[in-house]
Length: 141
Ligand code: ZN
Figure 1: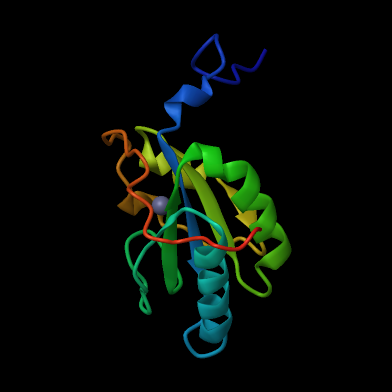
Figure 2: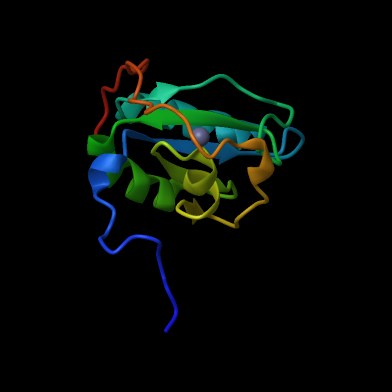
């Protein structure tokens, strides 16, 4: 019999301190689309919009910006992104204490999946609660 896990009990969702959505774009082709999605999000969700990375950074294989959000926002934000990502690929991953596993084994993709360079991610990190939101939502999703 195959051992599917090194644990005999399921992992509780309390392992998840927060979530990230990484919104990827092509600076030459889809940056305007990314800008529009970013302002739409800011108008509708209480999240932390990270800065623009027009060049590849960390484990990411394309230009992107990060959206950090609390677990309570997931059920509204993620379905909304499914409907509104357009041509953009988005990586949604949990933040536990294992960034490599979070990005490579446990994420979900909206749009076509892209490469993630897991060798640049640690297998151990401190819990990362969602930072204070920097948006002021005033429209309903
Ligand atoms: Zn991330």
